[in-house]
Image (cartoon, rainbow, N blue to C red; front, side):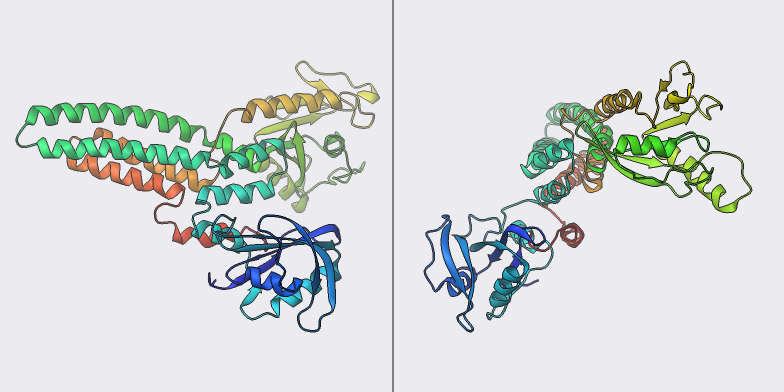
Length: 432
């Protein structure tokens, strides 16, 4: 992707819509906007109503609100123009066609606006990832976590850790200078450095251990719904989802492949997994569904074991739910009694799941290592610090500290991240 080209894209959602926003960024952004409005550009950073016409034939395209923004204080770090149009497909197509007909203007690649902001130091890499997470956020907890990333919380934490490494590294290198002439000074510096390093190792171990909670916020919790055939597993899934997500039938073995249903549990994302009924069977396809059901239950964050009071539950772990209260089913000790058909107990079941989700992810507490890349970098830094703390040789200690500093620097994109840029920006849509 050439950074000298001027790029254009629809930045708002798919038409038709009330308003559509087209973004233009690059050295020709203002002149391209000026060509559509006859050269009378509005005052920078102020929306103004303008008539848009096609420079090729003078035909009217739309009456639009136009704003221009001078670089480098823009999202991309370049001159930027925005056209706020009526959101019809014909209007959008006409304006885009007129812009793309201009020499030096082309359609943006996915994520190219944000990528230019990264290369022009308007965003660091964790902020870029935060933007992608914010676009994908579906719950309050995901939005809060993404906003923290976008606001630079993880970048500041990684930079602070890197600074601490460099401070201890300075002491380690000082110990090398004193090693031959003043051995007692060198020994005292080494003792202090090792103590500081052990404290750092303990702190970072806590951060890495808590990383799974951040991943659960970002990716969502998983809840497997298991039990024998015909106990109402699919009916309970539908009742919790408040829609007909799974097929319900009186025939045993209706559900074979796991069915995933998204759920918002008090602002925490979760996925309900409706699984095949657990029983002995000679049907190869159903048996495979049962095998997958057991595998999903093992991997799930929580298992809802459903029964109807007439069968023995396969496991005592997880949450026990007895269905069909409307048919006179008697509850079991420690189990929730519900009726998916009539709605009895469903509110209590949902409330129980909300409480469980809140305790599992603790959304009010910061947890920033939400991406595998972040967790791997902090884990690598922690390992390097642990090796440095145990090293008796000052040279080896200094080398471990340098490795840790590089790992922390890679988090925000300060050091060696070219190999992961394409992977990160491929998640973005055109226009962002």
